Image (cartoon, rainbow, N blue to C red; front, side, top):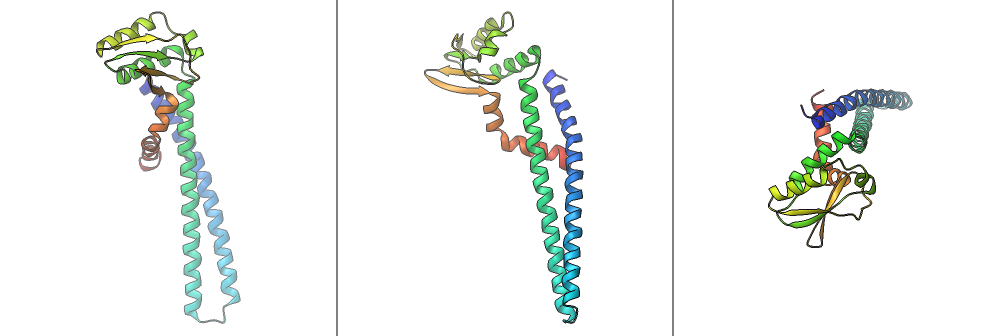
Length: 199
């Protein structure tokens, strides 16, 4: 299992624990809402007890339906909040990874995004200061494998995690933020599947 896979596994494990707690809380809230709606429905039923059984039954059905709708809305909101928290936590974990793990991820990203052209790569000030020994040569070797060339820009970019590639004046945003943004729906679906469908 690679470092990234271990990290993903750890993130998902932490997220599952957090999700279960949040979901349990949401279910309690939904249950309380259901009880309140039931009490309100019973009060309404007492007030109109002299009306026909058919009318009372219709009111009870509406109350149950309303309660069920409120419960489903509460659960949906809770699930959306959990998924957002998991993604934010995963993003933060990537940003806070130790240098070895962090630059291993950047190597993988380079293999994926480098084009067979001559270009330039830009990092943040922070990343420029902590580039591992020989990393610039690794960048050039990866670019060469792809049939291109990549020069390290001494000009930094205001990015948090990842890098920016420049080919012929066109910038390719390969930051963690851009990755998460472009894959948000896919990641949300995957987190939903892992937390709520496999639980």
